[in-house]
Length: 362
Ligand code: IPM
Ligand code: MG
Image (cartoon, helix red, strand yellow):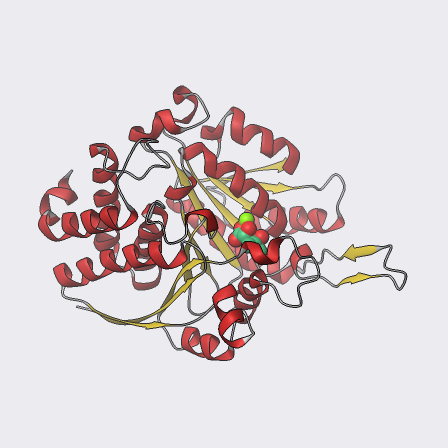
């Protein structure tokens, strides 16, 4: 029996409706396993700009810091996208949150589901059995380097900076993960062009000596982008810097067949944050049609990574798989489906409550 406190940041667009389904799964788990989870909601993103003029208010930061884990929905609103001069943008909230909470590693597992083989743009024989995880550095690099414009406004720059320390701390997590998996790690960089990438390579080459059982290889990011499509089964653990990780994880996410299936974790020194990979999908907001699986699976990652509740995480994953196998899916997976976001959430919760034993042996 465990007592834990979770900060819930539903955010923008479909964030609130998919997060609500993840909460149903957490409530079902706490009922079945007698845990006590308490929740505090806080504002983030465009919702926070509208309410208090700041996409990551201090109040939200305090709530996050004093929680055992953070469940996050999505951030972003189209009213800011086409306005390069907007004084504050929802995405700044996400970046501030990552930086202020020290969430230096973003973990994005990519795996496929048999039931979705036909939904993937890749051939079934290429994707069956794909199972890799990307460790993306999240608080450094070009995202956070000095940015600026010249006085005449005709020149702009974004600095890309990395320190050895920043590379080492995420390398440790990635190597440890590789040890528990198929013991293969690929560093993705652009060492043929970038000084920061050469530092990454140097640091990782040296650090790899601590893990003689892990086979390490090095791949330029352009080549990696190609290989992820040509032969995704090749990869086990990918380690990469912030912007390369941003790009290749979106690329990798389509392999599964729906962006709506993929969870992620952002971890650092203290509290960790869990969120679906997909964005705020504003066109679908409030329509009860978005796929809540990524959010629900993010709750499973939360239980596993932050609380060490492996069986509870497994039962959530099994319940989601059961929905897929029964064809109980939203329209992103089957175009003519009328099944709603909340129906999938209810079904997952119901499966968890009713079928605990049979799900675990399935
Ligand atoms: C992501 C997103 C963010 C990023 C945006 C919304 C700032 O694309 O989490 O991958 O670029 O990191
Ligand atoms: Mg991205």
